[in-house]
Image 1 (cartoon, rainbow, N blue to C red):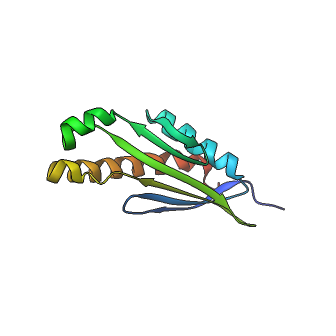
Image 2 (tube, helix red, strand yellow; image 1 turned 90 degrees about the horizontal axis):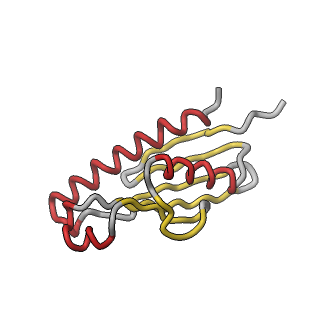
Image 3 (cartoon, rainbow, N blue to C red; image 1 turned 135 degrees about the vertical axis):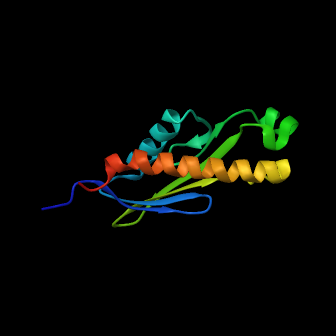
Length: 127
């Protein structure tokens, strides 16, 4: 008997999360992550669901307002080996352009997204 497709591991990192899936293709995982980001209010700025950049907020607003702007950017990379499909979700923003305020907001935003992603992924965990 083979395992049903499922999320095998969710490892939170400082900038996001690393995920390991069993029984899902690279396309499947890319689409799962695309659905998560669309549900969370992000748009795909560039790339594909398997290797893309998801954003919220305005880049122009970030340039003008620095750490006070509500801009978020996450890169998604999905790949596979013979056994597993892996995904890395990582914030590409540092908050440094907004000094202390920007850094604090960026860390808080990362924690929120990691929590939302972890909850969203529970539906794919092994039952």
